[in-house]
Length: 272
Ligand SMILES: Nc1ncnc2c1ncn2[C@@H]1O[C@H](COP(=O)(O)OP(=O)(O)OP(=O)(O)O)[C@@H](O)[C@H]1O
Ligand SMILES: [Mg+2]
Image 1 (tube, rainbow, N blue to C red):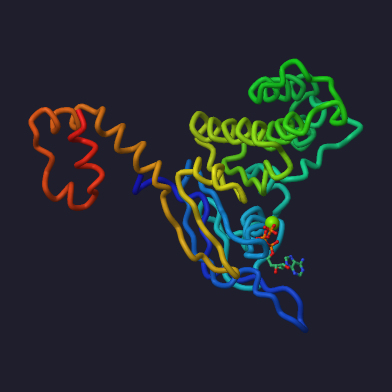
Image 2 (cartoon, protein in one colour):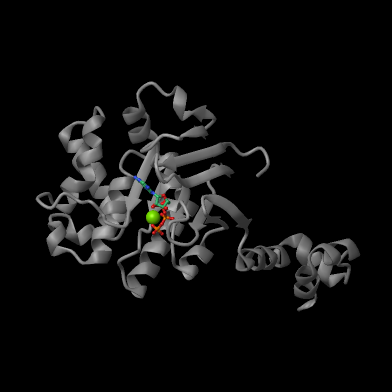
């Protein structure tokens, strides 16, 4: 992990709005996210979550401070549109699909910037719709799809250019709990199988707990940056099942210092 490439970094990131009544939407945010991480961003309404995501995606510029994507400062990027479309995929709460285009055509939209031929674009869009479980709805218009299906199309579109980073702002905000779970499972799978760095803003505690790291904002500041408890438990169970974990339990040799650092580890390892 330690030497893994840094995907996203912010340095003393500030964004203020307004001149009469100044709002400090982001007030000195320093975060580092490594390639392949799955991070949830949570916090009260108005805490700066969307502002942060917009900054990371170069949709907005800092008042001061810096955003680095894969080590490169966004301030130094010459063609931001091109950089954005090659590197970053966006999924918004309002899916922003084009109503007059089919699912397939919507997914193919970002591919027009590539040098792909029409047949290649079609094939790629089709592959992506298969990936998100919409093989049977290729020619449906957005109005003919359910909310969850529309959001799947939006995710497929976000992935079209094979972005290394996917930014999702409340991607399940207007979905019921069943569709929310399905979309979150899909994002989780993309992160695990494709290694996509995933940053998801969510109000939903259950969705946040699916991430491997939760960053909480309040008044434009990072107030906590934690690994959810069940991720520790998942890691502990994996360790318990590993060769070393099994050997330690069999020989009843859970090292003292290990149980001191993580009491749950000792407890878990002793449960045979
Ligand atoms: N374009 C803008 N002009 C003025 N103020 C803005 C603008 N965009 C955001 N703000 C202010 O910045 C603060 C942070 O807004 P932001 O949209 O980032 O919050 P959020 O955490 O995403 O909230 P929510 O959960 O409601 O989506 C808020 O006080 C908001 O009113
Ligand atoms: Mg928001």
